[in-house]
Length: 225
Length: 50
Image (cartoon, rainbow over all chains, first blue to last red; front, side, top):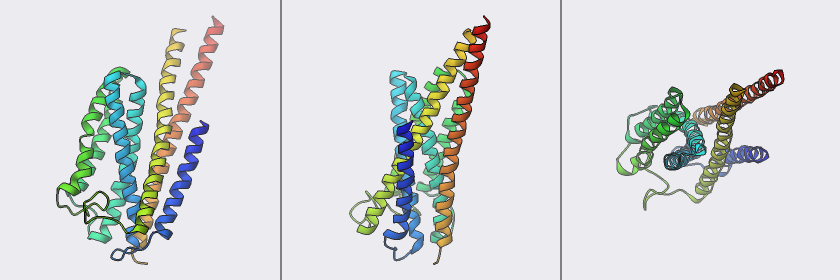
């Protein structure tokens, strides 16, 4: 509990510092001006979301292999947290796109694959509400989670494999990509801050799932009495 | 400054989503904790009656 409080405090302080750096430390971009400052928030949230889904994927694989409920708890925690980050991405992206492109949305490969990812993990959470029996729910949702993860590399590769309305990658995008040194430091700091926030939210959500399991045990004991 | 309102809304709505998500976890945790306490008390009560 104390560890989670400390982690929460660290996450809040880091994201405040990252927001400060995004507005007051990073240099202003020449063509977009102040609008480009959404980049530090939008992209760091996208990376944290994809990391959460990747951890969830590993947890789903481990559940299918070992059938330990702690992997099921981790899988659902990562799915919910990844979904929260992806929701932020899908909202901040169009807000950035309207003044930059003149439109809120277009069905290009990156935007569509991200929207599909969001729908897949909504379906994952809905599936869990439909199955009563815990072991069956854990197994079926782990299998669905493994299937849903197929879209994560497609989201990552969409702007590398296809010509899209979405800008080409500035990180890991080949020889002509990259960020100015002042921007790079702020960007990686924002990515770090968002990953700490992601870790904190997963820890909170995991403890909720653990408590739900304890409640089930207490319920069974009460019924036995 | 041009487009400052877009930057403002992107950050504000983003933080609102994280805050709402955290509140939903906290609320669900509190509800579960209350339910565990209620069940423990009722189990204790029925075992005393026996």
